[in-house]
Length: 294
Image (cartoon, rainbow, N blue to C red; front, side):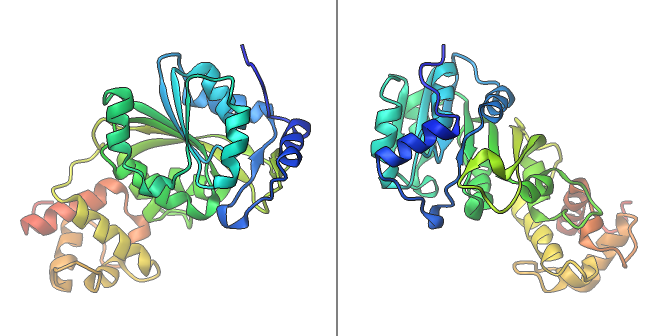
């Protein structure tokens, strides 16, 4: 049973006024005030009674209350110290919640998960600050924590970028990085009217189901992502021209062109037209020096 629900404008405003809280632009604070969206997030995350959940940016505890009612344990990590007294009040009824006043990008999550959850899989749920969405997502995906899934609220365009495939203007390095580690699925779009204060952009809830192992085989992950980054840094250039001066890429333009042709692709192709598997194949060809195997 839900003990206390903050997911509406009146209760949210009451808490904010009681504590004389001022929204901080530097933290990108926008609190959810729509219970329907909150329930969709819980449903998408598939929170169960034996789950250990990490919530990033709990704000005043609106989503946290829902999580505490469904999960075994919740670790709520909030960077704004002004919100800690509010969270201590709104979450006082829950014995299964730990509140941290820390920066998620400076926390050793692997150690904490090992200590708090004995190394078992965890789920991450968050209404992320839009200005720092990508660094947080990549930190989670690239970390060694036993991550089962990430269910997050992000800017609409960012969610679409994570899910989109080759050939569109939204497709980029973030698309490929996310799709290497997880299966993305947009759950629902969210109007600015569902937040306090209202953001200037639309939002979306996206679910990232972490792969137990990447869906493609690549001999050098670091090199593959160097190729991806270089190809999108100058996305209007051909793939070969974009890669020849890419940071950390030691291969000559001739070697790059031979590898592209070995993939059966024209030299006029741009990086935005390659799928993740093709970037992996290109990486493997460059490493092996086998330019005539296709």
